[in-house]
Length: 380
Image (cartoon, rainbow, N blue to C red; front, top):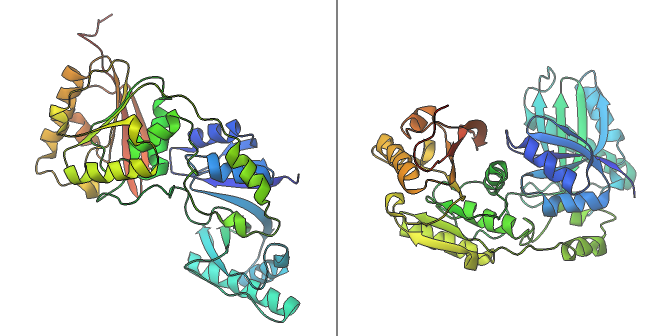
């Protein structure tokens, strides 16, 4: 099978996690970038990447790389690509662009427009007519990456972002991205061998992703479509074989999820049912300070309100309560807290053993780890 240069896009801070995932499904020549991991693989690996990678946002297949002096030469290079190899005049398409350090292209919309013109003119010359542009629901997704005077043209094999798993019926006010949630769990090292606790579960993203990880349920299990299904040469038999061949794992531990909002818990329960993991999650409606869970060696992940999610009148008291509960009621476990403010973490009153930087949308966040020892830590 022909090998391709591939790029998996991700969230800042999750590149090492994604690289490990790519290695696990057979990717070669893996190299971490910024918000991306570069690797090589065949058509089967493109299908697997979309179906199995929990921390990827989209998978790009490189089709052309070129240098250009100016906008005219850029247009000509784009027009020279054999676009008929990739789609037909009857298929709709859309172009998205990412531009950095370019004198010629000051914004990505202008770059996308030039590529659209080049594709349209290519088809007119070859076929006498052109395919339609559809920005809402295109069949073919083309991605343009311009850095200085180098352009990489790729086919986006995913289409809609891979964080849209297909199980979310509704969401809370500020839901955690499924990709970020899966990344947070994988960064914690949790793999289903111990209990998992989320005392501020919102619409349930963390416990649902945890249940899927614990049972080895692919993140693409409930997704309806991928852009690669519209490609010329799409092998439906191969994709069906990939979907049928994965092995689920037996999960014997428990996932505990609670939230102070009854509405949020109901939403989380609906989403868990749609993901077919409802029976693995013990849902409670309660404040964290009233949550009673008897677990040892469990992983606790907390995504408290912050930034745009700030609804607490006194955020200092909230974080102090989290610290008090972790120290006195969750000893013997490991906790992780995600927050956009280092100041909030000070109110937890515990010393983090590790701090990582992650992005929740545009918000830079600290992801802090706390080992919750029973009794007093012996001083050496």
